[in-house]
Image 1 (cartoon, rainbow, N blue to C red):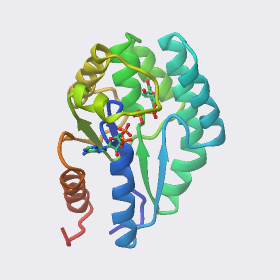
Image 2 (cartoon, rainbow, N blue to C red):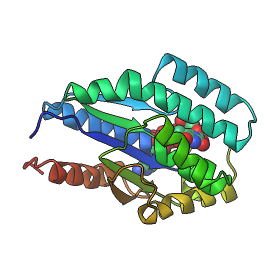
Image 3 (cartoon, rainbow, N blue to C red):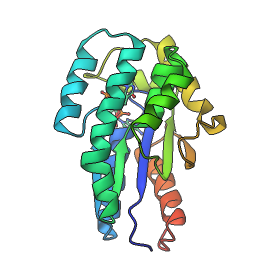
Image 4 (cartoon, protein in one colour):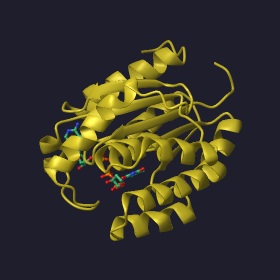
Length: 207
Ligand code: ADP
Ligand code: TYD
């Protein structure tokens, strides 16, 4: 395997199981001796966590939300993602660019031009691979017992549709692979599929 780091993002509606799967993947990679950094959006840096608090506790316009999410993303790029990748570490990120597409652009109507231009302006790096945990919002909402922002089912259905559009979108933000995973299954089945794909992609033989 080359010593260049590898950048993986996990996406999906609230309650789809991203945080759970990020932790499982991180543990498995560590067992294989692959040094990895786990982070999340919004957040992942001191400034990002401050932005997270502002966004999750206020009612902002979708354009302002996008601006803050990308500001947090830029900080995460500079302080966490780029340094880790250049040291040959893997980065696993719970939400990233595609959340802004699914929530702000597709579900809330922010223009795609603004979305693309702001990411280009800030030099945001693209992941190598993105796993989208696809699930019926009714199942996901039942899973979420507390925390996070309240979203109604209609909204989450739109967000899910946004995620389903990803593999036919060409934004010029860098090429990467998008893999859809049926997330309405047992944790171990989901992690098995994710691991198989990651191992294959990276030439790891023991799967
Ligand atoms: P997200 O990060 O996408 O919001 P979490 O990983 O925090 O989702 O999971 C939300 C809740 O659902 C947690 O209580 C978690 O333990 C549970 N959960 C995660 N994956 C599954 C699964 N495959 N089946 C049932 N419950 C799950
Ligand atoms: P969080 O509690 O981290 O999400 P989850 O329930 O998936 O664990 O809350 C983050 C919220 O921010 C979530 O509702 C999705 C939203 N979000 C956006 O709208 N746009 C973005 O670009 C990002 C990164 C998150």
